[in-house]
Image 1 (cartoon, rainbow, N blue to C red):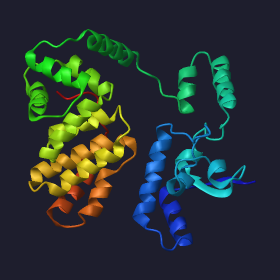
Image 2 (image 1 turned 90 degrees about the vertical axis):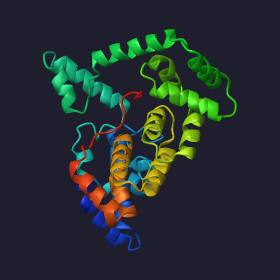
Image 3 (image 1 turned 90 degrees about the horizontal axis):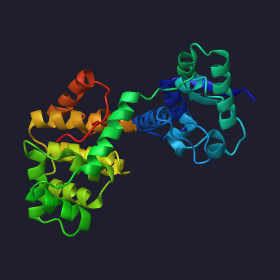
Image 4 (image 1 turned 30 degrees about the horizontal axis):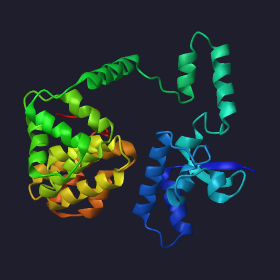
Length: 298
């Protein structure tokens, strides 16, 4: 068995199109980028092994064995970035643990640097401290105003999202002194009543930048990337003000990029020309490849 053959993204797309005449180049490329993003985030096959990025691009996330039924690759393509990772060949968890142990044992003075070389990321203690502080704040937070009590009663007990409930949420969102820990904990719980409020607001104003941002933050705690993409895409199609469209497109990109979705690429397909197309092309050159809101914005 010769193993994987490293290829660039463009090489894989060309090879795939050559063998599959009816395939769409942009669709294949988007699939590769999505699978590569998933690999970078540590997504694994259902069996527990690392995903085969090239195969996952067209067959869904899975390792080589689960996708092909074969034990080992024999000249099959794989992305260069994946093949160049020192952990790539170590599909067995025991082998990975042994490698880590060996590094710590043989390089006690610089083991952190050695582990980073094989793909380890170190969690910042300051982040852990901040997380604990937020948890404590959220546990002790209580409603302080009549509006907050009305809103929390709905979030806890459910019911129909009336205009009064939506207004209670919007009032809390735009007040000069919001009770952030109180509301934030319902985002982190992926509270269905909170989601219903956000969707009600978007049904009335589909291009509302703030509500879309809130929905993006909510999506960090709920598996709803497809829904989020749908709402942002609809908003971009509906928006007629080009300044607001530019802001929408930027938020769309930033709130989905880290999850493996290239919003600007997709918007360039939806708007291949015209004023919106020009805005998207400009954003390609100016927007940082940064993802997602780190915290609730209000």
